[in-house]
Amino acid sequence: MTEPRRLRGHTAAAICCIASRVRPGLVATAAEDGRVCWYDLRCKDMLFSMDVGNGDAVSALCFKPGNEDIIYVSVGNEVKCFDLHMTASWKQLESYSYNKDEINQIACHPKSSFLAAADDAGDVKIIDVHQRCLYKTLRAGHKSTAKVNVHIVLIAGSGGDSGQCCNPAFVHALVVPDLDIVDKVGKVCVVARGDGVVNIINIESELAALKSKMSTKPKLGSKSNPKSHSSAADSESTDQNDRNLRLDYSVGGHVAAVSSV
Image 1 (cartoon, rainbow, N blue to C red):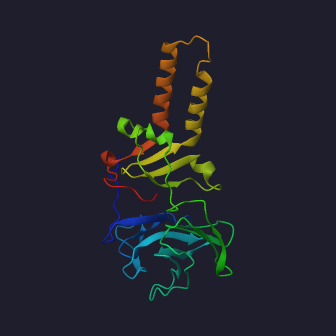
Image 2: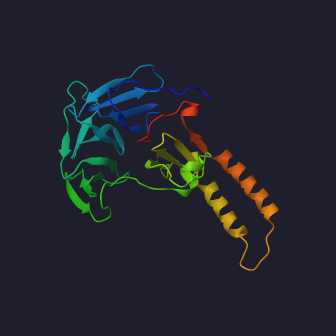
Image 3: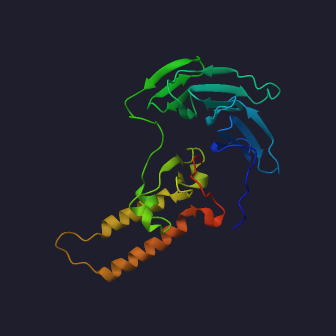
């Protein structure tokens, strides 16, 4: 396997990363140093950086749908908006401070003017960036930090870590393909884990394997053939490992928790 490339530029822990859809190879990262760093994977060095946090951590990033020259960043309980063409000053275009607690993730609806900002109090603020006002607050869905905290059975058994089956690693982030590109990349799910592992899971094959196990499960009072079932399970396990990927430190991956994918 090719040695993974490391993007250097931050002076503190990296928190978030996003990739451009219209500019292949363009990646932006945010960190606790309050900066957003931009990279072109075809170039050796960092393109440029933005000091948008004034020393405070930048917790999340997202592009404006349909116009990736506009980027939204979250710092503390505030969402800021910048134009990438204004590299001389990095003066913010607009800002929103509707969240009462620290924001940990933001996302823009791909086909509307709504931006969602999830905070540590468990609230999700829906902001209309076209009207520049608060549209609504989603509350009571979370008791605390509005962040991904999912234990997935499919992940717990993959990769052979028997200890993780009883206490699966914390899931920091999930990402699936957008509808308009799912035909090209398939129905996969990429998972960022607290133990430094990144899992790439083929959802269709996992569901097919689960259905197969359910259908071959012996009914009450019926006789079963352990040997044949064992062979089938071994075959399914082999096929499953071929379909899924586990990226950890042994292949040049992370040695600490992965926070974003």
